[in-house]
Structures are given as C-alpha cells and as structure tokens.
Length: 301
Image (tube, rainbow, N blue to C red; front, side):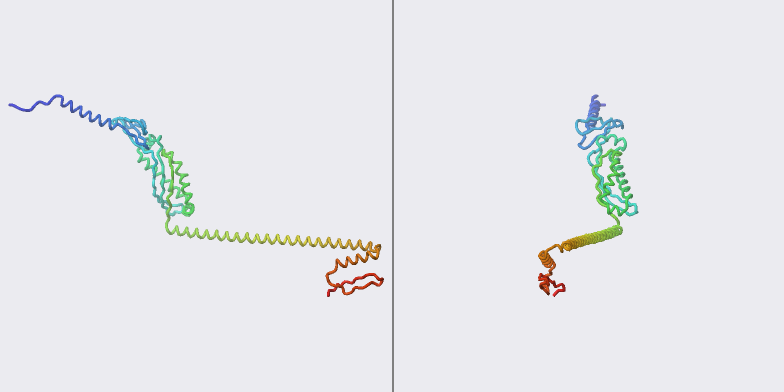
C-alpha cells in the first residue's frame, strides 16, 4: 500500500517550544517594566511581602512572576462630604464640607501594610472626616452654629488635623460650604436675632442719653461752682474794701483835729466827688464861719 504522507521533521516541536518560550519571555519582560508616573509611588511586593517602593525617575524592572506592584497617588486629593447631623439641642443640620489632603510619599509602604490599597485608605479617611464633623455639630447648639458659623471651620481643624498622622496624610485645606436648618427654626432664630439687635440698640440709646444727662449735670455743677466762687470773691472784696474804708475813716478822725481848715475843705470836696451819684445837690451854701459847706441830695430827685 502506497501513501503520500511525508514524515514530520523532528525539529518542528523544538521550534514550537522556542517560539512559545520567546513569547512568554517577551510578555514577562515587558510586563516587568514599571514606569512610575509623576505624583505616584509604587509599592513592590515579592511573593506578597512588601520589599520596596519605587518613585518617579529611572528604569525599573521587576519580574512580574515574582513581584506584584500597587500604585499610590500622592498628589492632592479632595473629599467632598455631604453630612446630616444633629446639634446638641436636637436640631437637624445639613451641610457640605470640602477637605483637601495628600498621602505622604514616604509612607506609601506603611499605608500598604496597615490599610491595603489606596481605595481602602480613602474609605477610612472619609469615615474619619464624617465622624469628626458629626462630633463638632453635636457639641454645639443650633443657635451657636448659625450665629458663630465662621468659628466652625476652626473647630473642625482642631478635631481633624490631629488625626492626619494616623492615616499618613497631610491635610492642606478644610472648607465648610455652609449649614442648612429647617425653615421654622431658621425663622425663629432670625426673629431672635432681630429682637436682640433691637434690645442692644435701645440699650445703646439709653446709655447715650444717660451720658448726655450726666454731662449736662457736670457742666451745670461746674457753672454753679464758678458762680459760688465768684460770689465769694466779690463778697470778700467788698469786705476788704469796707474794712479799708473803715480804717481810712478811723485814721481821718484821729488826725482831723490836727488838720488845717484848708486841708479839711479839700478832703471834704474829694469825699463829695467820690460819693456823688451824678445828681445835683439840693442845697449849696456857705457855712456860718464863712467856710464852704456842701449838702448832698441823698433822697434822689
């Protein structure tokens, strides 16, 4: 019996094996090249055990059939958290907060050991953020949250920042977008604020009026004191002048007998001039002794 089937070359199987091995080697080689992008860190495991981290730059070759890799993004990330909480006085508070943070590049291997993947880490970070927000809201009354909203971000900083080392992150910004309350409660608080502002305005007006009255009283008291001082000064001056006049008359009486007639007349004329009120005398005549005598009009015209 004749057949046309040719025998298979002996080296065909060897060639097939070589080709397969070449393909496997190529896949292994190209699959083992690790290109680390900027802003990332690659954690390398060998048979599941973390051995090293790779950072951007250079040529990294780790055989894929021995090593596995996990990429961690170390750029700034943002967590947008919508929360629904209750204040200490059981008022419902809703809001939104934005928190920016980044993974510390040198802690990527530690994160992989403690938390696993980056997604698992972020899940725990967001849970921590949300819990701290709830704790902050629950520690304040709704009225405080409305009237002192600008202080809430600071309180969130004080609660959240100390937690960052537990997750190997650095928090770069915390922004509270706003708080929302029920319409009925908001209206009640607004009415209370308006009433308080009116009360404060009234208090200021009353205090201003009191100060004005006190000022007027002080001015009146000073003016009264000035009048009293002036009156006392005038009285003292009158007393001094009267005493001086009395002493002058006493001296004149003591020396009167020793004066000549001419000097007496001169002194009487001078006295008449000083005491004259501008009215003409009723009687002007010579005395019995031929001297000059003057009778003043002391009764008026």
